Structure formats: structure tokens, C-alpha cells
Image 1 (spheres, helix red, strand yellow):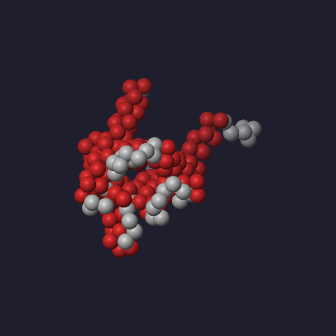
Image 2: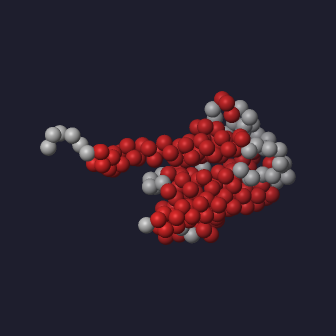
Image 3: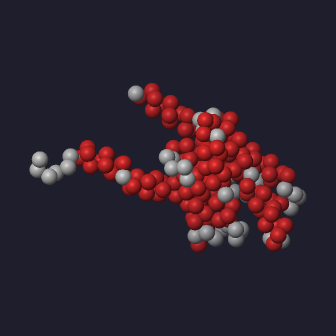
Amino acid sequence: MDGTVSQKKSLSSFLNSANLTALEALLMLGVGASAVVLHQVLRAPLDLPGRHGLEWMALLVIGRSFGRSRYAGSLASIGAAITAVLPMWAGFDDPLIWLIYLLPGPIMDLAFARFSRWQGNLAFLAVLGGLAHATKPLVRWVINLVTGFPYGSLLWGVGYPLATHILFGAAGGLLGGLVVWGVRRAGRARK
């Protein structure tokens, strides 16, 4: 024994230490930030409310499914909320966009904790994606009622935006679930 630690031992101790939790937290914050970046990059005047639920819910389901922390979804939402208020994203015309990004993650975390046996079920992930993304028009509707802040997507009521957010969120949840399923299946095939 000369006092040196083998490479294998130091790597395993690193992975088992609190540093892994910090690394995972950074990854989840990055997942959320990626959703905001994609929202800006894919911004097109399609006049189709909820379309960004496809990528946002897919990323959130993937991050939450692979995250070992029970707060992985919340961390991703925090990353999105922080990124959305950075000055470079001045294109967002909603002063409360941070709140819109903040809500789906905790909903995902609560559902994963409450219905843990369904976490791998594609239908569950699709429904969860739809419900989590539905928070956006619902919160905007409440903000509009309380403050009078004008949201273009709510000009003709909350029904249509709610339906499209649920549909795009469900498609995103399904897409994320398919990615998780494929990665896990490929991992089992390698063994």
C-alpha cells in the first residue's frame, strides 16, 4: 500500500458521493434550459396554441424518467423558469413566463411519486404530459381574470387553447416515453 487510490475506486466513490446529485441537478436544470432554447429556436407564427408542448413535455418526461432524484422534474422546471427570464429571451411577451415553465415539473414529480408503478406506461406518460402542459392555459386564464393581462391565445376563450395544450402535451409525453422505452430496451439488449 503506497497511498495511491486506484482509478476505478476513485471513480466509483465519486459516482456514489453527493457530487452525483449535484451533477444530476445540473443536468436537470440543463434539460429545462434546453426547452426554453428550443421554444425560441422553433418559434414560428403558426397560431397554434400549445405546440411547444411537444418538445417541452418530451424533455420533461425524459429527464424525469432518467433522473434518480424525486425532484428531477421540478429541477428541470426551475432551469426552464430561470432561462426564460434571461434578458436574451426578450422575445417572450409574458411577464409571468417563469411561472408557466415552473408548474409542469412538480406536477410530473407528484404523479411519479403517487403512481410509481405506472412510470413506464406510455399511456400514463402521454396523459401526464397533457395534464402538465395544460397548466399553461389554465394559469394564463387565471392571470387574465385577476389582472386583465391580455393573452392572445385566450381571445376566444380557454377551451381551444386548453384542448390544444393537452393534445400537444400528450404527444410530447408519448414521444418522451418512447425515447425512454427505446433507450432502456437498447440497454437491456446490450447485456
